[in-house]
Amino acid sequence: MSLRLATFNVENLMNRFDFSGYRNQLNEDRTLALFDIRSEAEYKMLEQARAIAQSDDTRQLTALAIAATRADIICMQEVDNIEALKAFEYGYLFKMVGQGYRQKYTTAGNDSRGIDVAVMMRNETAQGQPIEFVRMTSHAYVTYEQFGLHTPELATLGSQANERIFRRDCLEVDVTVGGVPLTLYLVHFKSMGSPRNGLDGREATMPVRIAEAQAVRRIIEERFGADHAADKRWAICGDMNDYRQRVKITGDDVDGYRFEVVDEAQSCINVLTAGGFCENVIERRPEMDRWTFYHTRGPEERHLCQLDYILLSKGLAAKNATAVPDIIRNGQPWRTIFPAGQEVERFPRAGWDRPKASDHCPVAITLDMVR
Image (cartoon, rainbow, N blue to C red; front, top):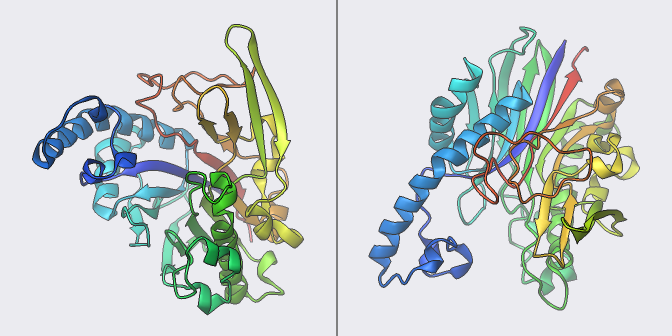
C-alpha cells in the first residue's frame, strides 16, 4: 500500500485583489509601475484588469505542475482561503486530473496578507485505499513566551515575547490511509526579506526561522513523547525559506555557466534533523540536483537552492529507505538557469519570467504505508 505525498508553494492563490501596491511600492506590480497612475480609484481599476488578465495562464501552469506530481495528498502554501482553493480545483485541476481533490482544508494563520497553508486530498489513493480526514489542529496562536523561545536576537529584530512564533501556521493534520495513521505538519516559515542591521536578508531573519523550527519540533515531541516521536509516522511539509546548501551560478550563456555547491554554516533545517529526528529526503538526490528554487538579483547574485521540503520522521524514512523524491521543474520560467543535463520540457506558454507555475517547484514522494 503506497501514498503519493507532495508539497508546493503555489504563490498567491487569491480570490481577492491586492491593492496594497498603491501605497507600498514593494507590493506594486512592475507592469503598473510603468504608468503614471493619478488616483487610488484608477489604480484599483487597473490592478483588477491586470490580475484577471494574468491569472488564467498562471493558474493553468500551477494546475499542470500539481497534476504532474500525481499526488494523493498535496500540502500547499500561499492559499488565500477555502473558497479560492475550491474555485481553483474545480476550474483548473478538475479538467486535468478527473475526480480531483475532493477534500480540502485550511485555516486562517498569521500572515498579514492572508495567504495560508492548506491541504488537498483525494478520497482514495491511486491503489484504491481510502484517505480519511481525522482532525486538524492549528498552532498559529503559540507565542515565544509560551514555548520559552524568545531570545536577544529576536528582540533585536523587534519581536516581543508575547508575539506569535509562526509567521503563518504550523497546521497539524491527522489522516488515515487504508486505516494506517499519518500526521502531517504544514508549514511556511518566515521569508528572508531584505538586508538589515548589517546582515543579508537570510542571516537577519534566521532567528525567526530557528524559533519556528524549534516550535515545530516541540509540538511533535509533545504530541508523541520526546523519546518516541522520531519513530512515529509523520512528515513536515512546506516552504521553509532556508537551505543547507546552494548551487552558486557564475558565468553567462555566451561563455558558459559554472555551478558550485556551497555548504551553509547555519540553517533552521538543522534544528529539525538534529539527532536523527527526521530526514530531509531530497538529500537522497545528488547535490547538484536538490534545488527547488532559483534566486537572482542580477548576474552578481544567482543561485539554486532547496526551499521546499518533505521531512520524514526517522521511523517513516527508515521504512522508505529507497524512496527518492521527484522535483517537478516544468513550470519554471525560462529565466531559470538549469545545470547541464537537468533541462526539462517547459509546460506550454511558460514565459521568460511569467507566466509560470510558481517560482517554487513541487516536491513529491511515494511512501510505503504498510503498518
